[in-house]
Amino acid sequence: MSMFVGPQAGYIEGARRNVPGLDSLHRMTGLLLAEHVPVNACVLVV
Image 1: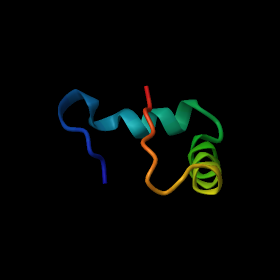
Image 2: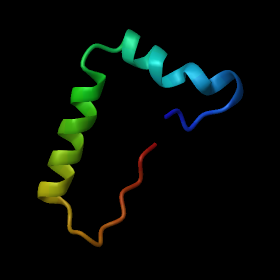
Image 3: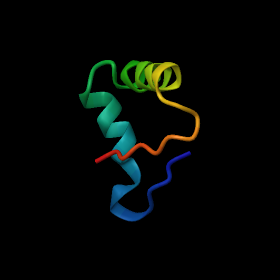
């Protein structure tokens, strides 16, 4: 399911291993955005 290729391919697995609650953080962020941001909004993620 990784969108990365080459040396970056293991990035998300490493991030999940090293950042406790990463999946929960992404899930909560999605819920908060869905509740508070208009459907036609543009969100810049840096």
